[in-house]
Image (tube, rainbow, N blue to C red; front, side, top):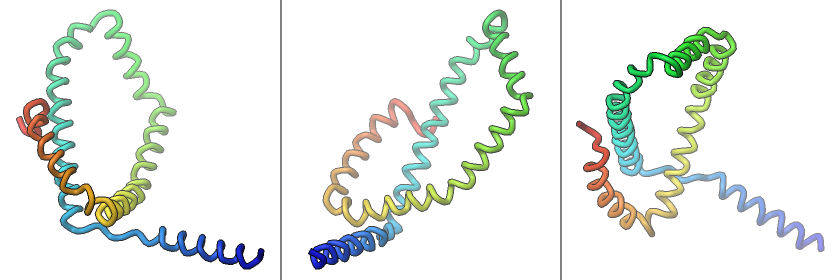
Length: 143
């Protein structure tokens, strides 16, 4: 019985050691990911500017009633020290978490590049390329 327990413990330790060794992502994969991420952010910013341009005239007409109450509440909130401290804490946490997120992203890209990409990489690349055509029509990155 003790032999079986010792063997199970050794196997469990080997698995945990293997899981700690995450492969590094290929440089080409990281560059491709960064390019896609920047295009995605450009698409979001372009969509935001279009929505802001469309909604801007409507919000100016809401100067009376509910619109004025919302503006007053936002101004009051911006002067609230509790809100300002919460914003400072949130931004500090975001700055502290950025390296951890980057490390997790690189680990995910490494795992994808090592285990998944050889099997589904070409299909995923073709799907992304075909989707880009429709995204360029609906939500272009550049105006």
